[in-house]
Image 1: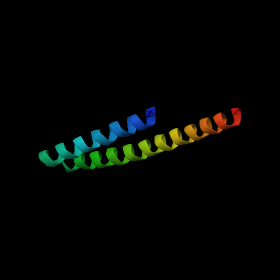
Image 2: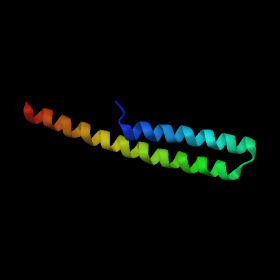
Image 3: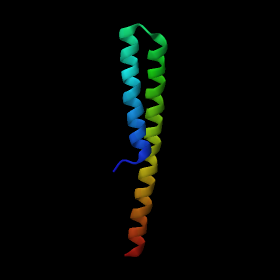
Amino acid sequence: MPNNDEIKGKFDQVKGKVKQGIGEVAGDQELHDEGVADEASGEVQEGFGTGKRKVGEAVKDLGDQIKK
């Protein structure tokens, strides 16, 4: 199950793509560039969340193995 960082990261990626699209249609380069930054930030945050989740799963699996 995705954690908060993964969800927020995905949201920021979508928000960034929307801003990029609106910026292109409106001819607003600043808005487009802001969208690129939001998308990149979202990718980083999602990656951090995924890593955090995988570490948590590995620790849980290790704990389950020790309990056996």
